[in-house]
Length: 132
Length: 132
DNA sequence: ATTGTTGCAAAGAATTTGCAGACCG
DNA sequence: CGGTCTGCAAATTCTTTGCAACAAT
Image: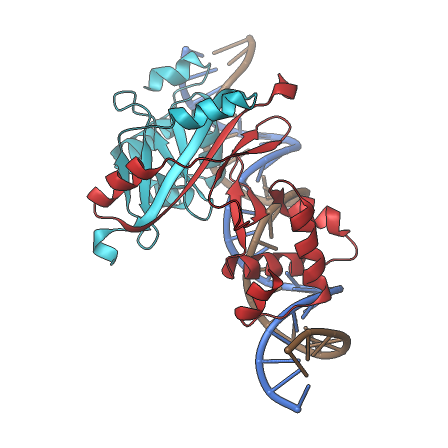
């Protein structure tokens, strides 16, 4: 996985290894602040964090999910699980994965309008069992 | 439509009327800057714009769409057209509406995980016919 | 040795808050 | 009139940039 970075001409540093392990151990997408907290605010510069996240996204090893307010949450792309979407609790922030992705019909409609090279973003929001 | 505001205890001012007409005349969702530009940067305070947009959203007369970078785009809720999604060109920002919303299966999956009171956000991104 | 990476300081952008005067109803 | 709304100034928060020292390959 770190190899993917190397293939994009990026270097594997101790700093990045720490970041990768935090992202790996997290079961769900994490906000920048959450990541920074887990890394230890004083041992990992926030600027470096932004730059690493940008680099990882660039290398396509990281994907961005957004909460209802549009804030970015980062998650390693697990090639084993493949493309999927999430349900996010709007009260406690809990996140679950939904496995199927059935947006084919939407993409067909978009292609009919002349769009190509399509991607999409879909998140569901709700109240989880524990927050009701 | 301005009535909806009144019903939420909000007042109808000349300022708000101007904002509503800008939003109405726009065929597609607009960013804060775009709205501010159309209103005339010097004749409408940006702070007031943020506050009005917040109030309109609160009153459920305005909905938020997000571009690929997560930036908010505002659109009046047209009760005639109902719930729909968009395709956004990632190069020129052109936006088209997709009429069908076939998100039922996703919601079923989320309910099975214990979530209720569901909402969702879905946007497609691509390159429009003119940008290829 | 070369080139990417990091931390610090500082700049910049986006959004919010406080407050006094103006305005709607 | 009473309660909102507005504009201005200023504070926050979030993110990016510049640069010199440092480290990976």
